[in-house]
Length: 273
Image (cartoon, rainbow, N blue to C red):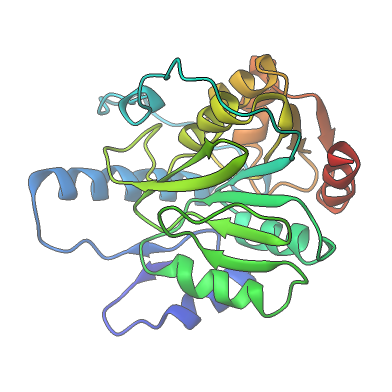
């Protein structure tokens, strides 16, 4: 659905609950880069809608802008040693259909669940309202991430729209960094950015979850997580609105477990014990 002028955030979230697969913000006049990103976003969202519920639509080849990787956001690794920790952290990525998938996942988690960091592809301005709505129905606390927020048990942090979100660590403390930057895998925030940062700073202490969505954002990052010793889970095809992102991660070899949506929370808690 398109977001016209005068459109309220609550209307958009309600539309997603009723089955809308995405929200497209009406582009504002601005720089050439902003307009180009808006063009790519609209094309990708229309494609995602056409493929929702596993409906296959052949796309004609067309010239597209280069797809940047998370290298444009990730700083070079530091050789400075970090304090050892066994504290678990969960990172989750989702796109088309993800708002309802995340609700189903988060609302069954116990209040003492490991800290969770989430990237959901949503327009700027919607993630705060989305976080507040989830916070009202879940036992875990849910909030839109702010720079330097600590990742703690019983809380889920959601990447703010139009900003990348990285997991970082200082000693035994996990925290998040909110960053500007170009589109990565055609998205901002990008799941790949979050997952690759989790591979670097959490390693075997991380559990990664990739949910419903179009495209391949998160696939490379999930493989990097698995190679770093993390456990990884993909939502299955039957319960995905669009099986693109989970399928790409599976094909790349980055997934340990494939589970239906209603089993993912249980698997996460088991892997974190």
